[in-house]
Amino acid sequence: MNSIAAAPHVFWAILFIVLPLFIVVYYAFVDSSGNFSFENITALKDYAPIFGLSVELSVIATAVCLIIGYPLAYIMARAKPKNQKLFVMLLMLPMWTNLLIRTYSIMAILDDGGFLNTLLNTSFHIVGTKGAVIFGMVYDFLPYMVLPIYTCISKIDKHMWEAAQDLGCNTVTTLTKVILPLSMSGIISGVTMVLVPSISTFYISQKLGGGTFELIGDTIERQFVTGALNVGAAISLVMMILILISLTVMNRFGNGDEGGIIV
Image (cartoon, rainbow, N blue to C red; front, side):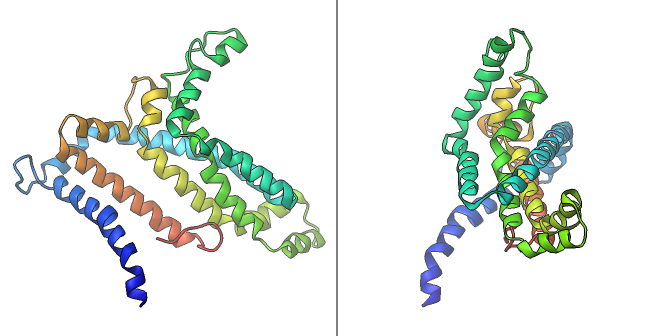
């Protein structure tokens, strides 16, 4: 009976997960004629600078999300239950809007003649810089950092806080010696959930980058649009491996019951 109930899920996984992955692997190891070849893999060295830039910007965006997100998650977890619901709603409110619209909104704010320059009466050129792309990543993916950490901290037994205070710990010591170690699984989950989409993003970099540089997601899109399916599949295969490594690390050090996810 259980196998029958699971059949739709198995079919869905095979059709939309396993089969596409198999197709990507197949195209990565064949040439345009369908013959087995490592040519696509060896060609990846030409894209090393793009890989490096993608990792650089995504790591910076993830670090900024962690620096902003952890205090925010801590404040949310320490708030009254009624206020916690309000904070979560406000955090998720921008996510109700499509990513495309949110990115265009950021462009309208940061553009040369946009809201920010008009407000400050300046002419800063922001769109088309790495800073604009990082800002877009942080804006779009910050909730993915905050929510796992908030969930993890909110599940910590309140007696832990009281015991730390009874032993003479102040707020800072309690946070660094008790709360931070106990919320590490939420941090790992949040870092992974921000890092993975940041590395593979292409729309944010296209619009906020202004075409001045290219990230790995842009490269993959360009390869498929121009018909270079094999090279695009090889790059996608590398991205898949990076994602699997990230998930493995998260599952190794994270806790599925406290903010992490198990794959």
